[in-house]
Image 1 (cartoon, rainbow, N blue to C red):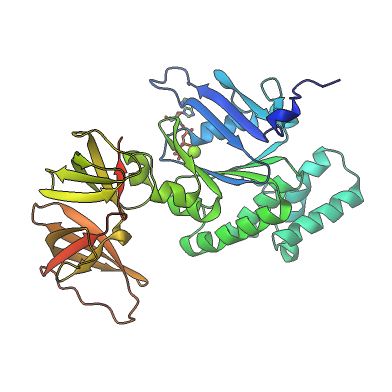
Image 2 (cartoon, rainbow, N blue to C red):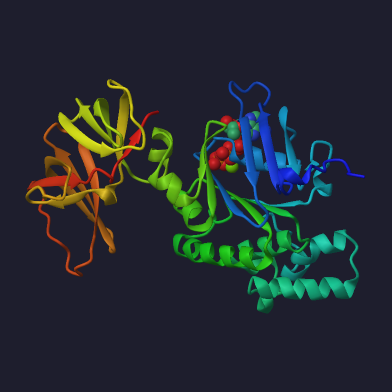
Length: 375
Ligand SMILES: Nc1ncnc2c1ncn2[C@@H]1O[C@H](COP(=O)(O)OP(=O)(O)OP(=O)(O)O)[C@@H](O)[C@H]1O
Ligand SMILES: [Mg+2]
């Protein structure tokens, strides 16, 4: 007899986590915090929800954990509807941004808390706590109290405490924001390593695009309670679906333009904004007159004293500023029309390539370097 939630084999395996049209509006709020989010995660995925402050990320996590009830839509984990399942009965743990460690308990007792609540035998608890502390490299600090730990160590205690119950899904709300920059970058690798080791599905929330892109195998970019785009990091970065996603995932130059000629994979754009004709490749023919924006990442722009024959497009301007960043320099160019564009140059020669403020310069790119945004 097929049980509830079973499906014909032809539909394939039951998806691990399914959110279908999940919505939530807080009382007196002018607009919904979460506005019809649908999402499917595979088991063992490291998924990131990325978006600006207030776009609904924490609210979505809290609904998954059961701390908040959706007004509409459904959440299923391994085929089971979570609608009537209270937080403590869900196969989900949440790691809070503040870590919320128990200050009076030792590191080991913090980590073992969930197992004591579950009334596991003492020696099992001791063994699993030791293994967890080993995983997060905190074995030597087992007897310390949270007040005697650095920010990075607290973060690892919180992670160990959240993983010890072996949830099917771990929710991480801005797990790295409390750490300083260098530690944050090291911890990224560490978190990914641990996630691979334990094989538990991670759903991480962040407003840091670099963090999301470097850690997650897939990203959902959120805007005002809705998902603007879902894809692999390189996909959302290289092929943003709209202006919001393009602008949120790092620096970008946008040229407002209109289609004046279109063949199979080539568009000619006329940009009144910068007074230029631009040639770009695009995977579909757009009607003449369509308003679009050409989006160009700073690293796709080349700079030279004279236009290069390999460029399909070039714009004249002057160097307005150079910010040396070590591995690369950010260059601001003021176009003849007054618009500022940004280019990134890798500092490969070792010696800093000299660009003088005010010197004339050409910025150019090939037809494939830009992305045509229709929205
Ligand atoms: N308990 C609440 N009561 C009323 N409004 C709330 C409540 N919690 C969140 N909101 C509102 O819902 C919206 C989404 O909030 P949420 O905390 O989910 O955003 P977020 O994406 O996590 O932001 P941040 O990056 O700043 O943490 C915001 O406008 C917020 O003010
Ligand atoms: Mg939040």
